[in-house]
Length: 293
Ligand code: ATP
Ligand code: MN
Ligand code: MN
Image (cartoon, rainbow, N blue to C red):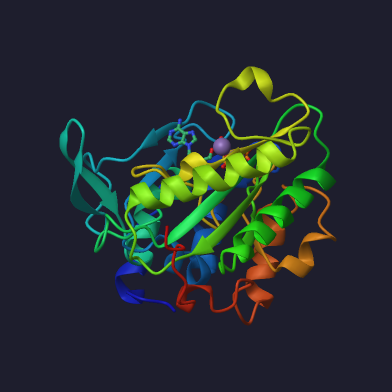
């Protein structure tokens, strides 16, 4: 998919020579080239979803900031959608094509964090995300085991799920949903699943936020499923030293992977070029729903 090809070429990326990732010498031009090259895989994951950006004007090693409102100067292909929040209606931003993506890059966006719902149906999540956050001293093998256990647990409820390297420290397990149930139901389901696993394996998992209890265990962060929460999307770069990408994997691939940062930008590019089908297959078309309560 290469939508809006003509306008995309017109998006000017200024200061292409500016180094963004100091350790590897990757520049703003490299970042733009990366996002252009993976747009076929990335755009379906972010298009028409309320989006939080992580912008890093002085590079990945310097101060970065999250932005979820449109603000000024993002570009004509970055759109806004009014969404109700506790404080009143807020204008969230979204993109829907390559031009929008490149305008975000021009404004020094490195990470893309969408909602688990679209701007067309923001009250009904179309995916669940379980974010595995390993505490101090947890081995990578155990993080992988955790992802597989969540997959098994979801299967028990008839839900197929998929795995992605966060590009940081952990893994995300994502279950697509038909957008039927509301946020409260999604959140409650995720909450209960996480707490059940933590009760069954208290030596391995916690399901509560408090930071002090996380040494040696994995926090199953189910709060990604609350209205307004975001998760980094597949194929997003991370603003960390080695330019790792949040990479979706086939479950069979997971055993061979030795680190959540296994795909730095150059390797992610190679993979994107070789891929014939998305590692998650037809995940968007799976017709699955949350179990009846
Ligand atoms: P890691 O594997 O290192 O945990 P991660 O992307 O899962 O990487 P988390 O800290 O677990 O990072 O956060 C999960 C998600 O919550 C992020 O991907 C992001 O979408 C969202 N998030 C975290 N911190 C913030 C923040 N300060 N502002 C907005 N969103 C945030
Ligand atoms: Mn995480
Ligand atoms: Mn988390």
